[in-house]
Image (tube, rainbow, N blue to C red; front, side, top):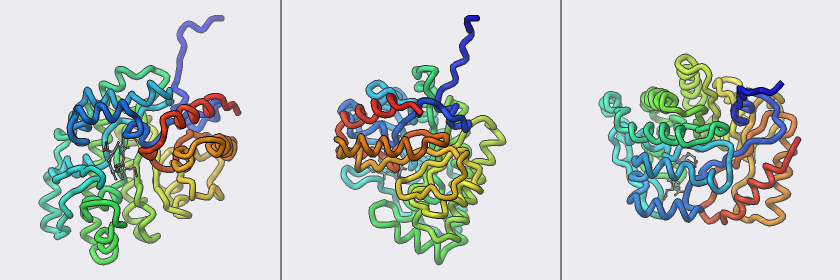
Length: 347
Ligand code: CP3
């Protein structure tokens, strides 16, 4: 009998629900960005990077650009993890060649208490408008991923005011100002919950928490400022939006990633290529983990590495991705090759 009412669930959702699929779905962190000429063109027209993030029409177009070229299985909202500090009214600028800059945060408890009333979700309304537009234009077999930074990673940029130097002030705070750091992480956790809920309400179908600098913390710090707040975020989202899968990315957390997997309540783990797979239960949904340097190089080495990555994860639910974002010098042809290799693979 012909099935007239076809129920096409996107492949990404199948895998996020723990199903083993024939074809492996894929998307790439930083799949939209400066390695694409069409991104650079729109970025110039928008003005600053933040102007681009806050322009729903441009941001929606940029979100969809990589899918038009490479047919990924998911779009990721084009925005940045530092829009949360922007939502708190902090001064945020992206300096060409240097990355994001904020005024280093004063960690006096009085300042942190003053900050607590300042998060204004309305400042992020244009981003939710981008989510709604993308969802409307995206085909039904693809999903839109929303995201936020892990509270610790966002705190690092707020405390140090910049990346690139290993976040010495944030690390000092984790040792000497643990109480103040608790207050800040608490504020960021609350704000992230509100912001992620708003993204889902606008149309995001899965969420990723980027904790890019979780690997800087001691095991105790990791428990306190990575695992505990992530657990609060997943619990809150589960309560309000029980069907939305959450992917966690505790980058460079080494063996601690197992505690993260077991305790935070995320439904999938984004791995980086330094993470050993030992002891991870075979049912755990994994995302990753090709080194973006190999994508940059291309050639036979890329072909072999993609094959090896697909084989490594073939007995578990797997979403193909990189271990960190696409490097801006990556030739788009290499991404096209990657897409073909993944699409041709069957397990
Ligand atoms: O993945 C995507 O395609 C979605 C968009 C996205 C961006 N940043 C766009 C961006 C996402 C998910 C992020 C997350 C993000 N931002 C993280 C976590 C992931 C990671 O990379 O570790 C972090 C730490 C940030 C903070 C940030 N934003 C940095 C350090 C920089 C500068 C680095 C650089 O590549 O210049 C940014 C700027 C930024 N965010 C760009 C893009 C496309 C480059 C901006 C430009 O056009 O000049």
